[in-house]
Image (cartoon, rainbow, N blue to C red; front, top):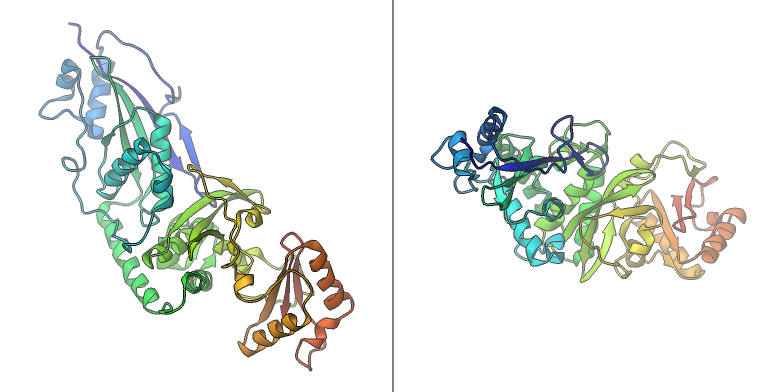
Length: 429
Protein backbone atom coordinates (compact mmCIF):
# COMPACT_ATOMS: atom_id res chain seq x y z
CA UNK A 1 0.00 0.00 0.00
CA UNK A 2 1.34 3.40 -0.93
CA UNK A 3 1.37 5.95 1.82
CA UNK A 4 2.22 9.64 2.05
CA UNK A 5 5.58 10.03 3.70
CA UNK A 6 7.05 12.89 5.67
CA UNK A 7 10.53 13.72 4.46
CA UNK A 8 13.00 15.31 6.84
CA UNK A 9 16.42 16.84 7.07
CA UNK A 10 18.22 17.00 10.38
CA UNK A 11 20.98 19.12 11.77
CA UNK A 12 22.55 19.51 15.18
CA UNK A 13 23.84 22.89 16.28
CA UNK A 14 25.80 23.08 19.51
CA UNK A 15 28.27 25.19 21.43
CA UNK A 16 31.90 24.25 21.79
CA UNK A 17 33.62 24.60 25.14
CA UNK A 18 36.07 27.22 23.99
CA UNK A 19 36.57 30.65 25.46
CA UNK A 20 33.39 31.85 23.85
CA UNK A 21 30.40 30.52 21.96
CA UNK A 22 31.03 28.91 18.63
CA UNK A 23 28.20 27.29 16.76
CA UNK A 24 29.21 24.13 14.91
CA UNK A 25 27.09 22.10 12.58
CA UNK A 26 27.45 18.31 12.60
CA UNK A 27 25.42 15.70 10.80
CA UNK A 28 23.38 13.33 12.88
CA UNK A 29 24.93 10.29 11.18
CA UNK A 30 28.12 9.36 9.39
CA UNK A 31 26.67 10.42 6.06
CA UNK A 32 26.12 13.97 7.35
CA UNK A 33 22.47 14.93 7.07
CA UNK A 34 23.03 18.69 7.06
CA UNK A 35 21.53 19.27 3.64
CA UNK A 36 19.72 16.02 3.03
CA UNK A 37 16.75 16.45 0.72
CA UNK A 38 15.08 13.79 -1.40
CA UNK A 39 11.67 12.51 -2.39
CA UNK A 40 10.23 9.17 -1.35
CA UNK A 41 7.06 7.66 -2.78
CA UNK A 42 6.56 4.54 -0.70
CA UNK A 43 6.91 3.84 2.98
CA UNK A 44 9.38 1.11 3.82
CA UNK A 45 10.07 -0.47 7.17
CA UNK A 46 12.91 2.02 7.61
CA UNK A 47 10.53 4.92 7.03
CA UNK A 48 8.16 3.58 9.65
CA UNK A 49 11.02 3.30 12.13
CA UNK A 50 12.11 6.86 11.29
CA UNK A 51 8.60 8.11 11.95
CA UNK A 52 8.56 6.19 15.22
CA UNK A 53 11.84 7.82 16.24
CA UNK A 54 10.40 11.26 15.51
CA UNK A 55 7.41 10.45 17.67
CA UNK A 56 9.64 9.32 20.53
CA UNK A 57 11.58 12.57 20.27
CA UNK A 58 8.46 14.67 20.72
CA UNK A 59 7.02 14.74 17.21
CA UNK A 60 4.15 12.25 17.69
CA UNK A 61 0.91 13.19 16.00
CA UNK A 62 -1.87 14.05 18.40
CA UNK A 63 -4.02 11.04 19.19
CA UNK A 64 -2.23 8.55 16.92
CA UNK A 65 0.76 6.27 16.51
CA UNK A 66 3.80 7.01 14.39
CA UNK A 67 2.56 4.65 11.70
CA UNK A 68 -0.80 6.39 11.69
CA UNK A 69 1.01 9.68 11.36
CA UNK A 70 2.85 8.39 8.32
CA UNK A 71 -0.44 7.08 6.92
CA UNK A 72 -1.99 10.51 7.30
CA UNK A 73 1.07 12.28 5.94
CA UNK A 74 1.17 14.59 8.93
CA UNK A 75 3.32 14.65 12.05
CA UNK A 76 2.74 17.41 14.55
CA UNK A 77 4.94 18.47 17.42
CA UNK A 78 3.29 19.76 20.56
CA UNK A 79 4.09 23.35 21.39
CA UNK A 80 4.95 24.71 24.81
CA UNK A 81 1.36 24.62 25.96
CA UNK A 82 0.86 20.99 24.95
CA UNK A 83 4.27 19.42 25.49
CA UNK A 84 6.43 19.18 28.56
CA UNK A 85 5.15 21.98 30.76
CA UNK A 86 7.23 24.06 33.13
CA UNK A 87 7.68 27.48 34.58
CA UNK A 88 11.07 27.91 32.92
CA UNK A 89 14.22 29.24 34.55
CA UNK A 90 13.99 32.73 33.09
CA UNK A 91 13.03 35.62 35.33
CA UNK A 92 11.64 39.02 34.35
CA UNK A 93 14.30 41.67 34.26
CA UNK A 94 14.19 45.38 34.93
CA UNK A 95 11.27 46.88 32.99
CA UNK A 96 13.53 49.37 31.21
CA UNK A 97 15.83 46.71 29.71
CA UNK A 98 16.05 46.61 25.92
CA UNK A 99 17.39 43.47 24.26
CA UNK A 100 19.85 44.65 21.65
CA UNK A 101 19.94 41.62 19.36
CA UNK A 102 16.14 41.40 19.29
CA UNK A 103 15.86 45.10 18.45
CA UNK A 104 17.95 44.65 15.29
CA UNK A 105 15.86 41.84 13.80
CA UNK A 106 13.18 42.11 11.15
CA UNK A 107 9.69 40.85 11.97
CA UNK A 108 10.29 37.37 10.57
CA UNK A 109 13.35 36.88 12.76
CA UNK A 110 11.59 38.42 15.78
CA UNK A 111 8.74 35.95 15.47
CA UNK A 112 11.15 33.00 15.38
CA UNK A 113 13.16 34.54 18.25
CA UNK A 114 9.96 34.64 20.34
CA UNK A 115 9.18 31.04 19.44
CA UNK A 116 12.67 29.86 20.35
CA UNK A 117 12.64 31.81 23.61
CA UNK A 118 9.24 30.35 24.60
CA UNK A 119 10.41 26.85 23.76
CA UNK A 120 13.63 27.09 25.78
CA UNK A 121 12.25 28.84 28.85
CA UNK A 122 9.39 26.34 29.13
CA UNK A 123 11.91 23.51 28.75
CA UNK A 124 9.89 22.10 25.88
CA UNK A 125 11.51 19.19 24.07
CA UNK A 126 10.43 20.01 20.51
CA UNK A 127 8.35 22.74 18.94
CA UNK A 128 7.55 23.99 15.46
CA UNK A 129 8.86 27.33 14.27
CA UNK A 130 7.27 29.54 11.66
CA UNK A 131 10.13 29.35 9.17
CA UNK A 132 11.66 26.64 7.05
CA UNK A 133 14.81 28.71 6.56
CA UNK A 134 17.60 27.18 8.67
CA UNK A 135 19.59 30.41 8.58
CA UNK A 136 16.68 32.38 10.05
CA UNK A 137 16.38 29.83 12.85
CA UNK A 138 20.13 29.89 13.48
CA UNK A 139 20.21 33.69 13.69
CA UNK A 140 17.18 33.77 15.99
CA UNK A 141 18.66 31.14 18.31
CA UNK A 142 22.00 32.94 18.54
CA UNK A 143 20.20 36.25 19.15
CA UNK A 144 18.25 34.72 22.05
CA UNK A 145 21.45 33.55 23.75
CA UNK A 146 23.17 36.85 22.98
CA UNK A 147 20.40 38.71 24.83
CA UNK A 148 19.67 36.27 27.66
CA UNK A 149 22.54 35.17 29.93
CA UNK A 150 20.00 33.73 32.35
CA UNK A 151 19.42 30.96 29.79
CA UNK A 152 22.40 28.94 30.97
CA UNK A 153 20.80 25.54 30.66
CA UNK A 154 20.95 24.95 26.90
CA UNK A 155 24.09 24.51 24.81
CA UNK A 156 22.58 24.30 21.36
CA UNK A 157 19.79 22.68 19.42
CA UNK A 158 18.88 20.19 16.74
CA UNK A 159 16.33 20.92 14.08
CA UNK A 160 14.39 18.93 11.52
CA UNK A 161 12.68 19.81 8.27
CA UNK A 162 9.71 17.62 7.40
CA UNK A 163 7.91 17.40 4.11
CA UNK A 164 4.24 16.63 4.39
CA UNK A 165 2.17 14.59 1.98
CA UNK A 166 0.83 17.78 0.42
CA UNK A 167 4.37 18.91 -0.41
CA UNK A 168 4.61 21.55 2.31
CA UNK A 169 7.70 21.76 4.50
CA UNK A 170 7.74 22.38 8.25
CA UNK A 171 10.65 22.98 10.59
CA UNK A 172 11.01 21.91 14.25
CA UNK A 173 13.57 22.83 16.88
CA UNK A 174 14.70 20.64 19.78
CA UNK A 175 16.92 22.53 22.26
CA UNK A 176 19.78 20.61 23.86
CA UNK A 177 19.31 20.99 27.61
CA UNK A 178 22.36 20.68 29.86
CA UNK A 179 20.26 20.41 33.02
CA UNK A 180 16.92 18.92 33.89
CA UNK A 181 14.32 21.62 34.44
CA UNK A 182 14.20 21.18 38.22
CA UNK A 183 18.00 21.43 38.42
CA UNK A 184 18.00 24.57 36.28
CA UNK A 185 15.33 26.16 38.46
CA UNK A 186 17.25 25.31 41.63
CA UNK A 187 20.42 26.85 40.22
CA UNK A 188 18.57 29.96 39.09
CA UNK A 189 17.08 30.42 42.55
CA UNK A 190 20.54 30.17 44.11
CA UNK A 191 21.92 32.64 41.58
CA UNK A 192 19.10 35.09 42.27
CA UNK A 193 19.74 34.96 46.01
CA UNK A 194 23.39 35.76 45.31
CA UNK A 195 22.50 38.59 42.94
CA UNK A 196 20.04 40.12 45.39
CA UNK A 197 22.95 40.66 47.78
CA UNK A 198 25.17 42.08 45.04
CA UNK A 199 22.49 44.51 43.89
CA UNK A 200 21.85 45.62 47.47
CA UNK A 201 25.45 46.80 47.71
CA UNK A 202 25.50 48.53 44.33
CA UNK A 203 25.70 52.33 44.23
CA UNK A 204 22.30 53.95 44.68
CA UNK A 205 23.43 57.28 43.27
CA UNK A 206 25.44 58.20 40.23
CA UNK A 207 24.91 57.42 36.56
CA UNK A 208 25.27 54.36 34.35
CA UNK A 209 29.06 54.68 34.39
CA UNK A 210 29.18 54.24 38.16
CA UNK A 211 26.96 51.16 38.01
CA UNK A 212 28.89 49.58 35.13
CA UNK A 213 32.22 50.19 36.82
CA UNK A 214 30.94 48.72 40.09
CA UNK A 215 29.80 45.47 38.48
CA UNK A 216 32.91 45.31 36.29
CA UNK A 217 35.04 45.45 39.43
CA UNK A 218 32.78 42.99 41.24
CA UNK A 219 32.99 40.29 38.56
CA UNK A 220 36.77 40.64 38.30
CA UNK A 221 37.47 40.62 42.04
CA UNK A 222 35.12 37.69 42.73
CA UNK A 223 36.16 35.45 39.84
CA UNK A 224 39.31 33.45 39.18
CA UNK A 225 40.20 32.61 35.60
CA UNK A 226 40.27 28.79 35.46
CA UNK A 227 40.23 27.39 31.95
CA UNK A 228 38.89 23.94 32.81
CA UNK A 229 36.38 24.84 35.53
CA UNK A 230 32.80 23.46 35.36
CA UNK A 231 30.06 25.52 33.68
CA UNK A 232 32.63 27.94 32.32
CA UNK A 233 30.40 28.97 29.41
CA UNK A 234 27.63 30.31 31.63
CA UNK A 235 26.81 32.43 34.67
CA UNK A 236 26.75 29.49 37.11
CA UNK A 237 30.54 29.37 37.07
CA UNK A 238 30.81 32.96 38.33
CA UNK A 239 27.90 33.25 40.74
CA UNK A 240 28.00 29.74 42.20
CA UNK A 241 31.67 28.75 41.94
CA UNK A 242 33.70 31.97 41.53
CA UNK A 243 35.66 30.49 38.61
CA UNK A 244 35.19 30.94 34.90
CA UNK A 245 36.55 31.85 31.47
CA UNK A 246 35.63 34.73 29.18
CA UNK A 247 32.06 33.62 28.42
CA UNK A 248 31.29 33.31 32.12
CA UNK A 249 32.85 36.70 32.90
CA UNK A 250 30.95 38.37 30.06
CA UNK A 251 27.56 36.79 30.76
CA UNK A 252 27.78 37.41 34.50
CA UNK A 253 28.51 41.10 33.92
CA UNK A 254 25.75 41.26 31.31
CA UNK A 255 23.19 39.78 33.69
CA UNK A 256 24.10 42.08 36.58
CA UNK A 257 23.74 45.08 34.28
CA UNK A 258 20.42 43.89 32.91
CA UNK A 259 19.10 43.30 36.42
CA UNK A 260 20.05 46.91 37.14
CA UNK A 261 18.17 48.22 34.11
CA UNK A 262 21.20 48.74 31.83
CA UNK A 263 21.10 47.36 28.31
CA UNK A 264 23.82 44.76 27.72
CA UNK A 265 24.46 41.92 25.27
CA UNK A 266 27.21 39.37 24.95
CA UNK A 267 29.50 39.74 21.94
CA UNK A 268 31.84 37.05 20.70
CA UNK A 269 34.70 36.81 18.27
CA UNK A 270 38.44 36.36 18.50
CA UNK A 271 41.22 37.95 20.54
CA UNK A 272 44.85 36.94 20.93
CA UNK A 273 44.33 34.11 18.47
CA UNK A 274 41.47 32.36 20.26
CA UNK A 275 37.70 32.58 20.61
CA UNK A 276 36.66 35.21 23.10
CA UNK A 277 33.61 36.93 24.57
CA UNK A 278 32.96 40.42 25.90
CA UNK A 279 29.99 42.77 26.39
CA UNK A 280 28.19 45.49 24.48
CA UNK A 281 26.61 47.97 26.92
CA UNK A 282 24.63 51.17 26.69
CA UNK A 283 25.92 53.76 29.13
CA UNK A 284 24.17 57.10 29.53
CA UNK A 285 22.69 56.88 26.04
CA UNK A 286 25.72 55.63 24.08
CA UNK A 287 27.05 52.18 23.22
CA UNK A 288 30.45 50.96 24.38
CA UNK A 289 32.33 47.67 24.74
CA UNK A 290 33.51 46.18 28.02
CA UNK A 291 35.85 43.20 28.39
CA UNK A 292 35.90 42.02 32.02
CA UNK A 293 38.18 39.07 31.27
CA UNK A 294 40.92 41.30 29.94
CA UNK A 295 40.27 43.58 32.88
CA UNK A 296 41.41 40.77 35.17
CA UNK A 297 45.18 41.15 35.14
CA UNK A 298 45.57 37.72 36.69
CA UNK A 299 44.35 36.41 33.32
CA UNK A 300 46.70 38.58 31.28
CA UNK A 301 49.73 37.77 33.42
CA UNK A 302 52.83 39.88 33.90
CA UNK A 303 54.74 39.09 30.72
CA UNK A 304 54.72 42.69 29.46
CA UNK A 305 55.35 44.40 32.78
CA UNK A 306 58.81 45.90 32.99
CA UNK A 307 60.55 45.52 36.31
CA UNK A 308 57.84 43.11 37.52
CA UNK A 309 58.29 42.25 41.19
CA UNK A 310 55.62 39.57 41.60
CA UNK A 311 52.64 41.81 42.39
CA UNK A 312 50.15 42.94 39.77
CA UNK A 313 47.06 45.11 40.17
CA UNK A 314 43.82 43.25 40.61
CA UNK A 315 42.02 45.21 37.90
CA UNK A 316 42.96 46.81 34.61
CA UNK A 317 40.62 49.41 33.15
CA UNK A 318 41.95 49.38 29.59
CA UNK A 319 38.75 47.72 28.34
CA UNK A 320 36.14 49.48 30.44
CA UNK A 321 33.74 51.32 28.13
CA UNK A 322 35.78 51.56 24.95
CA UNK A 323 34.91 52.40 21.36
CA UNK A 324 34.71 50.06 18.38
CA UNK A 325 37.92 51.55 17.03
CA UNK A 326 39.72 50.96 20.32
CA UNK A 327 38.65 47.36 20.90
CA UNK A 328 39.21 46.47 17.25
CA UNK A 329 42.94 46.93 17.83
CA UNK A 330 42.93 43.61 19.69
CA UNK A 331 39.52 41.98 19.09
CA UNK A 332 37.64 40.84 15.99
CA UNK A 333 33.88 40.36 15.90
CA UNK A 334 31.56 37.48 15.09
CA UNK A 335 27.91 38.33 15.57
CA UNK A 336 24.55 37.06 14.31
CA UNK A 337 23.31 40.67 14.15
CA UNK A 338 24.71 43.99 13.05
CA UNK A 339 26.58 45.67 15.89
CA UNK A 340 26.67 49.44 16.45
CA UNK A 341 29.69 51.54 15.62
CA UNK A 342 30.58 52.70 19.12
CA UNK A 343 32.19 56.13 18.80
CA UNK A 344 31.39 57.83 22.13
CA UNK A 345 34.20 58.43 24.63
CA UNK A 346 32.58 60.48 27.40
CA UNK A 347 32.05 57.40 29.65
CA UNK A 348 35.39 55.78 28.88
CA UNK A 349 37.20 54.98 32.13
CA UNK A 350 40.22 57.18 31.40
CA UNK A 351 38.08 60.12 30.32
CA UNK A 352 35.84 59.87 33.37
CA UNK A 353 38.77 59.49 35.77
CA UNK A 354 40.67 62.40 34.20
CA UNK A 355 43.44 60.02 33.13
CA UNK A 356 43.20 60.62 29.36
CA UNK A 357 45.89 62.84 27.88
CA UNK A 358 45.34 64.44 24.49
CA UNK A 359 48.64 66.25 25.02
CA UNK A 360 51.27 66.61 27.78
CA UNK A 361 49.76 68.18 30.90
CA UNK A 362 51.99 68.48 33.98
CA UNK A 363 49.25 69.63 36.38
CA UNK A 364 46.85 66.89 35.29
CA UNK A 365 49.55 64.24 35.66
CA UNK A 366 50.43 65.34 39.17
CA UNK A 367 46.75 65.33 40.15
CA UNK A 368 46.39 61.79 38.80
CA UNK A 369 49.19 60.43 40.98
CA UNK A 370 47.92 62.37 44.00
CA UNK A 371 44.45 60.89 43.50
CA UNK A 372 45.91 57.40 43.33
CA UNK A 373 47.63 57.84 46.68
CA UNK A 374 44.63 59.48 48.34
CA UNK A 375 42.33 56.64 47.27
CA UNK A 376 44.78 53.98 48.41
CA UNK A 377 45.24 52.52 44.94
CA UNK A 378 48.04 50.10 44.13
CA UNK A 379 48.77 51.80 40.82
CA UNK A 380 47.75 54.57 38.45
CA UNK A 381 46.95 54.16 34.77
CA UNK A 382 47.07 56.84 32.11
CA UNK A 383 46.06 56.72 28.48
CA UNK A 384 47.35 58.88 25.65
CA UNK A 385 45.41 59.99 22.62
CA UNK A 386 48.18 59.23 20.15
CA UNK A 387 51.66 57.78 19.73
CA UNK A 388 53.39 61.15 20.02
CA UNK A 389 51.89 61.85 23.45
CA UNK A 390 52.59 58.28 24.54
CA UNK A 391 56.24 58.55 23.53
CA UNK A 392 56.54 61.90 25.29
CA UNK A 393 55.42 60.43 28.60
CA UNK A 394 57.62 57.37 28.19
CA UNK A 395 60.68 59.53 27.61
CA UNK A 396 59.86 62.03 30.34
CA UNK A 397 58.76 59.62 33.05
CA UNK A 398 61.01 56.65 32.32
CA UNK A 399 64.04 57.66 30.28
CA UNK A 400 64.46 60.93 32.19
CA UNK A 401 63.17 59.24 35.39
CA UNK A 402 60.79 62.12 36.14
CA UNK A 403 58.30 59.54 37.44
CA UNK A 404 60.04 59.79 40.84
CA UNK A 405 58.81 63.38 41.09
CA UNK A 406 55.27 61.98 41.37
CA UNK A 407 55.93 58.96 43.59
CA UNK A 408 56.29 58.85 47.36
CA UNK A 409 59.62 60.41 48.51
CA UNK A 410 60.94 57.10 49.86
CA UNK A 411 60.59 55.26 46.55
CA UNK A 412 63.93 54.13 45.11
CA UNK A 413 62.61 52.08 42.19
CA UNK A 414 59.52 51.89 40.05
CA UNK A 415 57.47 49.09 38.55
CA UNK A 416 55.49 49.95 35.45
CA UNK A 417 53.51 48.40 32.64
CA UNK A 418 53.23 49.61 29.07
CA UNK A 419 50.89 48.89 26.17
CA UNK A 420 52.04 50.65 22.98
CA UNK A 421 49.03 49.31 21.07
CA UNK A 422 46.56 51.04 23.40
CA UNK A 423 48.90 53.94 24.36
CA UNK A 424 48.58 53.18 28.09
CA UNK A 425 51.11 53.34 30.91
CA UNK A 426 50.65 51.86 34.37
CA UNK A 427 52.76 52.80 37.40
CA UNK A 428 52.75 50.97 40.73
CA UNK A 429 52.47 53.30 43.71
